[in-house]
Image 1 (cartoon, rainbow, N blue to C red):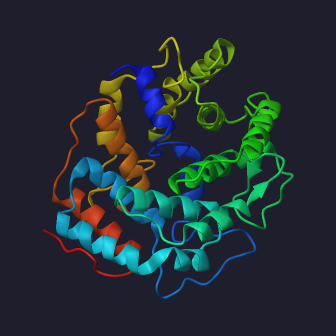
Image 2 (cartoon, rainbow, N blue to C red; image 1 turned 180 degrees about the horizontal axis):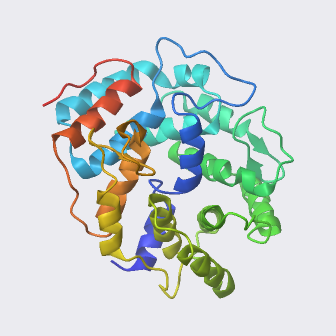
Length: 325
């Protein structure tokens, strides 16, 4: 498949956008997505949209869930409703996950105006979206890249258009700060932040802006010096979509061997493999399945693989929604 076509497609699909940053954030907040100084007690009726979203995303590759399973999940989500989400929510990540789940399930969110108001209240006139209401607005600009990307995608998923004035403000903020102000101390993070920056820019300008050659050469050299890992494979795959000369590549056979060695006894995959199945998580498992599909590698599935997804879905709703088959 032509990489430029893939670029246009992935600008509007969110399965792997900013995945390294999301990995860092979500792994620090596995049960709830909470802001510092604004934690709320988990309600009895609460859905973990992090686990649910990545379980459903993984299911697209594993085909674990039956039509009956999907129907049960839809009923749970519709019963929960977006108003309850707002009551329990503390960040843009909650809203983004909820809307992505709705999209995967082909459901329409209720209370659209309430969701839009929540998102708009996180907007700063400098040209970016904060992660949560209490977050400071004078942090380093790169701190707001992922939340801005998610804010824009959430608005799009609500079927709304960004006002021209706000679009100009965001474009101006991007031009002023990126990519020159990105921190290069962490090579993987720098590469992924650059990727998120380009995703936002291409969404706003509806263009196909690629990486310039100097930045691309730096990223290429940086990534080559990094040890092979799941995060590295994801970042290289992301960045390669913005490489006009298609210089970035992966040793697919070596990647396949490394990723397959990560699989744990419970059917899931961890971010780093050390033989402890408790480190298996649904985000890393989804990432592995995504990479296998992207590079046309046959996915190693067994009953434990399917059960891992079912268990994560049940855990996300604190109830036995689906049974084993």
